[in-house]
Amino acid sequence: QVQLVESGGGSVQAGESLRLSCKFSGYTYVTLCMGWFRQTPGKEREGVAFIDDGGSTNYADSVKGRFTISKDNAKNILYLQMNNLQPEDTAMYYCASPIKESGLIPCATLAPFPRRFGPWGQGTQVTVSS
Figure: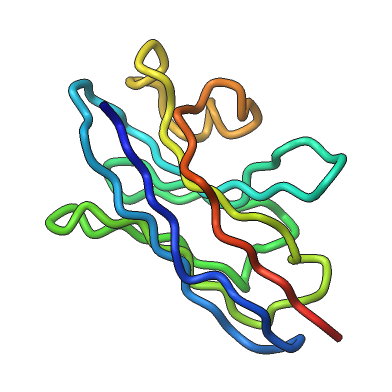
């Protein structure tokens, strides 16, 4: 059973940094892509950053140059380094990988479709004040 546990969220001032972690386990199928998503109340979950098994990355335009996704395969941990945080980054952040049926599809193809990802962890809250 796939499990993902996010941590590292918190409350910070604009311009500060946070590093989110996602410990993942239980995979019985191949998945080439992992990603970070965020969601605010009343809005659709949106993709923030993605990383392929080969290390290729994709970012939402709103976070390019500020966020960096990385993965430690030895420790089964996905990271999201978030620098120069802004109030509009306030959200619940989730990590996820594609559902089994989409496991072999690269991130660049899957990124626009959050519904092709799952299961989801409990999320970690990031709050940025101005």
